[in-house]
Image (cartoon, rainbow, N blue to C red; front, side, top):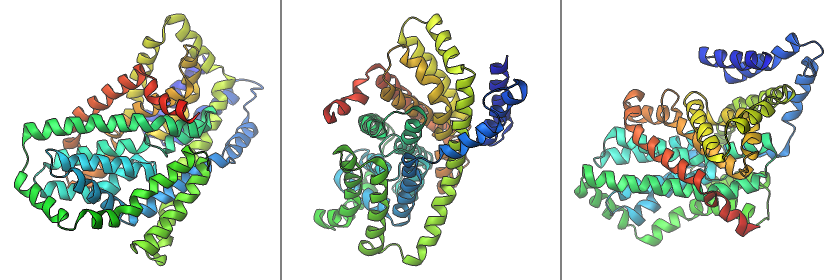
Length: 433
């Protein structure tokens, strides 16, 4: 009865429109009022909330947000796009594919989907529209590409999943690389088919390509070299075992400051206050969610909700395939109404014991969970990435939701394949180990 009430209160408050951390705060306080001498009393919850943020792993989140903010203001996405446009821009669907490649690499810098969509979209969408692509296609493409930003490491949802479950952040970063690339390839295959079917203004596209080509490959490479080197430094240190994810985040901030201030000269010292303030504002909401997620997680554990859920699943299903299918279906719905980070924080400690009872690897499930809820970035009614790109093309977001349906299907197909073949997520981990 108490379990049902806690879940119902959380769902009702979320549906009404209360902030997620308020929903969690009210829900986790209920048992202490209804159950005499319940362990999770007010003082217990306050200690859990404040001690939860005293964690060095969590330092990676604000640092990666800051690094992404610096590089976004510093025009890194522009240089990445020019480099990939030089390589593939003359082929059918080449320029939209270059946008996806830019999103992948920019995701390896900032670790956030909306940030990648905003930074890449500001440069890519006007270019695509000018070259004859439909506004709806350009905006939904950038939104879908931005979703890869939370799958390609360093990923903020991976850090939160690790914090909530105790799984290694480095293992998650390693596991997320190939699935992110795989989703990017799936998107590019569709793009080529779409462009061949709908047609392109080849005259404009080739003229733009020749203009870029006139600069020469070495000049384009020289201009984008330091931007291309950024994810190599960040991820190389983690994969090689030289740095922890938190240390890599520090290196990312220092590197981005040096490159943008002294090499590209796109940021002035007096701009840093606004950049740091913007990064702090971005992290405040996440910090609150992390603190309250730990509190409600403790309450769920004391109420034995994960055990009850695991027992229900094991008594209902005998193999992992229907369990994973059921969980993916639920997560798809959750992702439509909740941001990726709070969804990962709330549901990872609940669902991990369930899938582990069926032999699913904890790292592999972290990938499944993150990729599944990431569809919500381009699906109604939440669709955060599409709200970002709709403001760039100045179109109602509802028009983008219609065009995003195909991209959602592509993500869903990718999820099914990633779930069915754990090697996609775990292969690099075996090599590193």
